[in-house]
Image 1 (cartoon, rainbow, N blue to C red):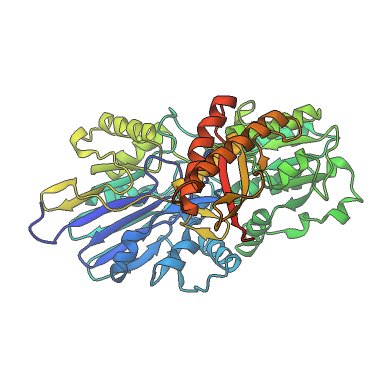
Image 2 (image 1 turned 180 degrees about the horizontal axis):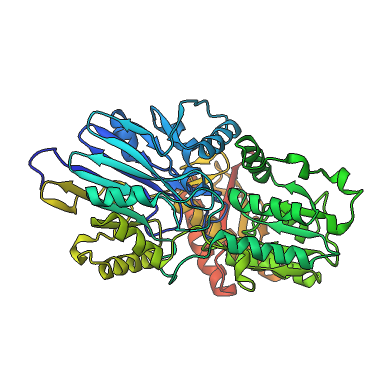
Length: 556
């Protein structure tokens, strides 16, 4: 396809067909730059998995080409995987904006990753390598210091939008629309544009609307304590809340490590100028209920977060009061709705008033561009080619349809999967060879050794339980010494199913004695017990517990 190597390859190792795990790569000859290294929170069926990260195989194989990692902004789905990446791949330098740098530094300290080569950039920075030059465009998002990344290559200019929206009355600086338009006039070969809200028509609401809505909630709660949960990384929202509390003469207690970190970073960077509004639980004892706001983590229903522990009545420092007001100032991440609804129901059962975005839309606005804003970005940058990124397939497809309505030819739009590559050369942009890409599961301190077989086993255990049979065998006499010992967890209660357990004991004895009558190995006996007992139990109960034979050889 390419007779020489004068072409640029662009592909994603995460972020396509999913919301999260963002990582994009631009490669020209012996130079490779990475954009973002995020995590994805696991779906319900990934039992016991904490995070999902990218497969770094390609980066490891091409380590000598890597020039830098560039970070668009400081949200977990863009920086959460950095500590794992740095432990597996040599990254010469990480470029990040000031808020992202502080968040990354804290993350690396927490995970005991010794890496300090994080360089700051702003919208005036220009990073030059031999063939690739990287610049930055200030954008508006729900966290300060968010940027689009401009990658200039010998085959044309690529722009990665990062997460963005167009807000004409933002809390922080305006997006640099003039720079976008100027780059559009210069010529943009390929646009990688986020698709999270492509299915939502119109424009996203301004943060100014949220400010008014939160102010209204606080103004009505003249005798109530307010417990408010939002994303800790949504620093602009936290800034809103602080200003609203100050206007309503409320002090703030924060709970949750990530919330504490966000507060400290906001104070350090001057986004919060008066820290006297924050108090601890001891100081709160001297205040009335309507003088307190509890700001905590857990807006996504995380079971160990502060809000969940408050709902369950197990928080050590906060006991729910009958007239408390609970505010969810966030949108559910796809896949988290059931967890959030469980928490909301617990609050309702306890009689407290709950404000959510579904009932009161103005208490949260998305930081992601809706359909008209995506069109606006395309009109400003005027790309020849588009690769929709950061979204499930239906979002990518809708973004592609929006692009067609903006005059981008359908054949110039690439809806890709993780690992699909697009090639930029002198003839244009077209599909290239696939790159190894996949999911890697993080389970506590274990990374990558939690495969599909382990997940399948966990599903079986969670649905049908476990049955352990302990067998004592005399290898010299080829004899089962005593009847099998049967123990179950999550299958049936032994005391209440004596007849079934007795039948299982007899069946196991038959299987083992039959195996012992000929030439055998311990592995053969285990496999035969699993095979025959599985069918036997399924016939009796309709269930398939995980069967674990434990064989002990006893010589007498």
